[in-house]
Length: 453
Image 1: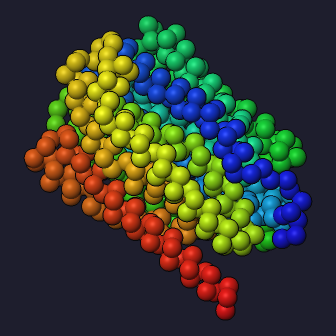
Image 2: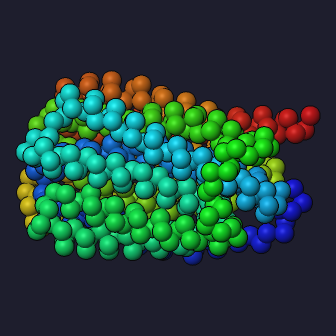
Image 3: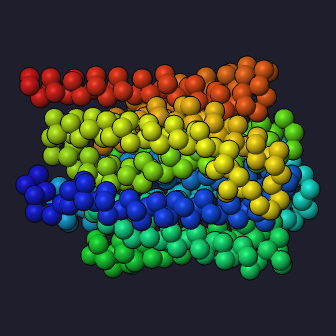
């Protein structure tokens, strides 16, 4: 524990001021990709197919990495680093080796199951068998590569090297758009997954090199088959990592299934329904991006505070964060709601997307925005739960949403069609937020009483 003070730490505010502008540029780049896709490809049945399986790939990435391995590794590595750099190296080596070996196998199994189930109600309409299979394989490779990227990002974020991942994310958008432009005349729909793979590979190569520098480990020792046969002490971190990942995988399944269920139910409403839902969600991601760029910084700092058992400092920092989100994002969301039609016209008003389609997307966006503020607060508090390793709370919250979402979807679709799916998501945000807030307050008080005793 004493070694923890030997590592210089930048303040939360300074890190946020440095990283937020870069992260916003990266998020804008991601939105530009969707603008390009809407302009060049429109909302055809083929795009429905691509967005549907892209959604499954995103779900698997969340399941294997973004919402599991990343969220689990940051607090574990923060605890190990508090004991010294040698312990941190041991932690990374033991976990990274197992992850790299098992993750592709698990990914292939899950992708095969998802594809088999999806074929029952969402066949490859309008695409040849070769093209459809190429798209599916492309998204499978994207999932594997992106999962590795998230683990590397977790290592750098724990060491508070935030700028490199966000800069690469911005450059990735340029590579993806350029690759689509070059490949589209020759391979049409296949250009989309291929471009996305190129963008991910670029990030993985650079992040891998930087992780070795930060950890002061040669590349060959970062992942070594000898780690599998290491002594019992070295298996402590993989066991802890696996146990916590299983809980977070349950949460990721519950949370990630919601957009998949939404897209599946939307597909029953006719052509372009999935595309419109996806375009509105991407625009709704703008306010999420404004707060989401702070999440890696907050998780890293809160994990370190938690590892030092500074409970009151953690609690004060979290509640200040909630207050800032309400003050800053409340007016922004109100303005975003008022000008949603104009925003949709500016971003999607050219190319293949019809005026009717734009108005429909604006309607869906407005409904999603109604439930956005409690969703932003929930996302913030979930990072606090993760820093405290309260994974069961996160799992419970996602299970509640997973249980209620399809029921409300079905009921609301009977009255409002595609808008009913958006209403289900928006209204559920309020009880979920209340549950997460109450649990954080309760668990913090319980831990304080334990320390006092």
